[in-house]
Length: 145
Image 1 (cartoon, rainbow, N blue to C red):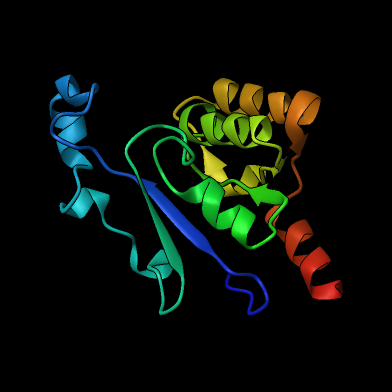
Image 2: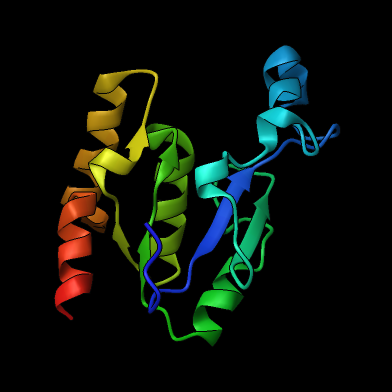
């Protein structure tokens, strides 16, 4: 969903050939920068004016300018989505929390290869880091504001 009043920052993990996890071989090659595996699907492709964060670690904050971009815009709440809930999503919401952001993680906008791990990561959000409203609940808040 694209909301006119909400500026989107799009981020995704791409592997560099020299990354510490490059030894994973085939898996890493599937999402190496410049390959089809690292490309946005058409429905989520950035549109003119949207900012992109190219991340090479699990957290979107590590070794990127994401914190600087958010602070310059006065952002205090982050909505973290993606794959996988218990790795990239969790690492990003934990990093964001440590930097002073309030984390929102919609369960229906992230996933994991293991439902138990997905549920555990979401429990961590609710217990210590923020909230887990659904996408529809978030949209309802935005549309009523």
